[in-house]
Length: 280
Figure 1 (cartoon, rainbow, N blue to C red):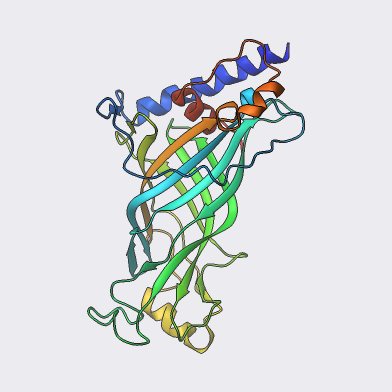
Figure 2: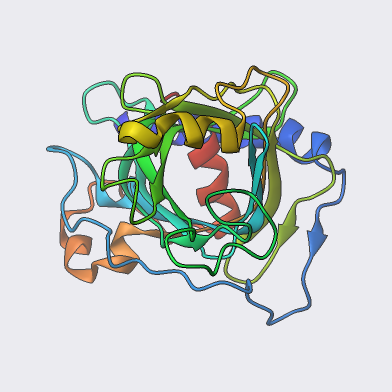
């Protein structure tokens, strides 16, 4: 009975994806045959272990790459010039048989703020006035489908500010008061590549707290970025790419552990649908 129950839940997850495809465009664009997404996916962070009792046939490892866009925090706008990569596991909880996502890692590189610490054009390259930012994961990551049928994602993060005068602990947002994003897919933006799905994801509802850990220059950071900044004054607009591989594909040795009789390698469309159908 368990394979049948899992199959029923997978069909339910796929059903959730149908209104999402309608909301994001009745006919999602398809890239030219043989065309892959214009970003690099790295499965190196995928754990080679699953929860106790998990069936590898029903689990996958997914990689999301934010490969472009902008993030506006108060009066400071930053282009996404370096990819931000998120790795997660998705599958069926062995205890409840419900679909779940498990966050694994978030990797990012420092990005240069063009107008530096003062926000004055041309000063970013001057000694002590340069400024870089880097995203740091705080918690609460999940993929889901909204009541309106849109693919969506939530994540709490903080932004590290790197400048020789600010020390090593200067952040916008903190572990207790993070920048909490609730991103929704933009209408008509879904595009399928051979190896991934792409979409634009946006949020204009989040607030941004004052800086923390910036020492005596904390006031300058808040003045530079216009912090704290209430909801409606900030925005996140990302070009997101998502790909996924089943655990039996990533780790062939796990095929001997498969419990679902007659299971076959799932298609990318099915993997994506089950990820966004997860409850947490």
